[in-house]
Amino acid sequence: MHATFDDIRPTRLIDEPNRRRLRRRRGVSPGMAAIVAILFAAALVLFAGREAPPAAPPATHAAAPPPDWTDIANPLQLYDLAAPEFAHSTQSYAARRNRFGGRQDILTFGGLDGRSPFFRLTLYRLGGEKAVDVPLFVALVRLAASAELSIVRTANVAVLPTRFGPIEAADVDLAAGNAAPVPCLGFRGAGLDGYFRFGGFACGGMAMPVSRPALACLLDRLELDGGGDPDLVGFFAASELRRDPRCVGAALGPDMSRTDWNWIDENDAPPPLKLRKMR
Image 1 (cartoon, rainbow, N blue to C red):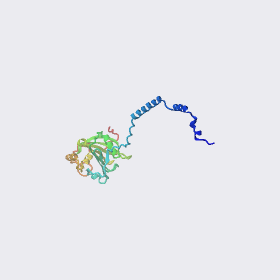
Image 2 (cartoon, helix red, strand yellow):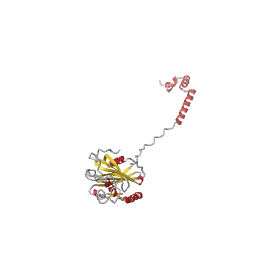
Image 3 (cartoon, helix red, strand yellow):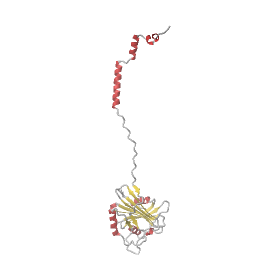
Image 4 (cartoon, one colour):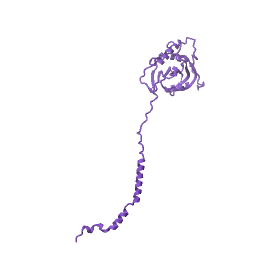
C-alpha cells in the first residue's frame, strides 16, 4: 500500500474553525497597536530633540612663557673700564637681554679670594620692563646671588658722590661658598630717571680693603663704547663734566698727595663685625 502526500500533511489535523481562533489569539488587538504607536512616536520626538554632546576640543599643550632674561652669546661690549690694577687678573664680559627690551652688561675683574682685588659691575639699561625699587640691602643680596656669592654682613651705609651722580655704598662682607668672607664695598646708583642703573662690589685684600674714594675713582674710568642709545650717550657725555681731577694715575685710588678730599672716610677700613647690621 502506498501513502500519498495528502495522507501525511499535518495541516489536515487542524480544522478550519480552530485555525481562525488560533490566528485571533496570536494577533495584536487594535487598542494595543494604538498604544505601541503612541510610544514609538514619543520616542522619535525625544530622540530627535536630544542634541549630540559637543565634541571634545583637541588636546592642546600651552606654550611656556619665554624667560625674562636670555644670555647674549658673544655680546658686543658696550662699556669699557680701564683698570691697570687688574691687568694680570681674569676678566670677563657678559650680557643678557630682557624679553621687554632691557639689557644688562656685567664686567668682572679678578676673583673673590681675599688676596687680590675683585671688582664686579652690573649695568642695567631698562627697556619696556618695569623695575621695582627695593632697599639697598635687597639689591646687594640679589647682585651677590647673580654672581653665586653671599653677603654675610652689611653696615655703614653712606652716599658717595661720583661722576654719575650720588651712589649708595655700604661695607659688606662678601663670601664665595664656604670660604672666609672678604671685606668689600657694595654700591648702587642710577641715572636717566631710573632707566639706567648700576651696582656691584669692589673688594681689596684682607689687609687693604677698597676705600670709598678708590671706588669713586674706579667708576670714574668707566666709558661707553656703544653709541646706539642717544639718551645713554648723552648721560655719559654729561658725566664727563663731573670727572674728579684728583683721580689720576694708574693706582686703584685717588692721588693721596692731595688733602682737599670731601669724601667720607677717605681712608676707611671695614667696621668691626660687632657693629649693627643694616636693617
